[in-house]
Image (cartoon, rainbow over all chains, first blue to last red):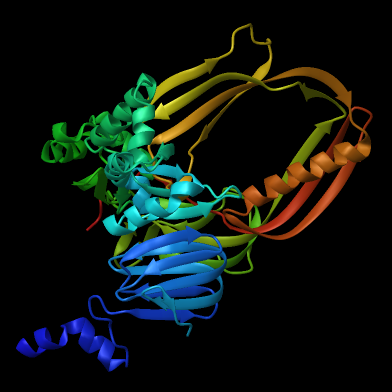
Length: 100
Length: 397
């Protein structure tokens, strides 16, 4: 029981079994599925929204999603999923751009 | 539209391009679920949230200066709320609910098992005579009393069990099979020929046979005697029984007159339409006006089978009138012959119930006013008939 608590419970064990690591609270993680969907974990705030550009503040950086017909597919606690035709992702740290 | 949104009630919210980021950030920070996210050409954002979420969002947006507007509302609650003034709808729903509740207290169907010679309708008629049937009020049904009453009323039902399974009455019966009345074997009888013929076979049960296979006999001739005469023990008598199968001839005549009456039917007219529900009949249409002097009345009862449910106690009966005019028509010889042949076939088929047809010889007689078919049929049949006789004096020992 203690072991389960320490490792994060059943879901963590299940995720680990299939080689998937769940993000910890506040941990930044970006999951890109093809060029149609991007899911950002550890999101704190929506900085701007336009159908061609979305800016999200993560824990330590700012994620910019560029493309067309962009829309928010869903919100959940600290997690935002954006769908549309994605042409670029940009991560900026404290206003100093650092593309990846 | 998600089903959850419909049942919880939903509101469609919209905001201008200038404040959509703030609005989305507010939704994100509150964790508000939404659907149907859309942005139009002018940049105006619209999305659908639950009514509860909309009630939370509206004051917060107002406090933060985010201009949003409610574009529309919907959902189950809203649907009922908008129709709150339609009294007919509510009364109808209430009546339907009442009917649904009350319908469980009435018999919907009667299913009879165990009947061999009795028809289901006959058993239902007996039950109906005892005050039970489709539409009976279940709490008032006393099955023990009903079972006793049915056995008293009907001679053909020896035993009955009525079990109420919900709204279905399962009726199990045992029929009464009275023993066939045996003729008094003590009364002596002979077997006598009922027609002329040549004997083909004899199945003797009792009696003194006086004929043999191949013998030609005449109508009224003694075939099997019920009397035995003996030089040693005197005479004794019995009731002769058995079958004597003989080849006999029967004559059938069919006459079709050339001038006959024929009915010319006019257009049908609906007289009445009745809805029968739980055995009660409600007239929903009745025609006014006089009926023609000559017409056929046809009643058609239709039982609907919605979704394959054939046991619903609901049906409708339509009564139609088919007026006709009788007029004389003259048949051609060919038409008359066709009719005569059809009638002769009917006669021959009715003959085959107690006889086997071996051969037939048909003669056509045509006269100016009628066509006559004479048929001589050769058949195999039982020609023996019991004829009782009296014994006078004391029976010898």
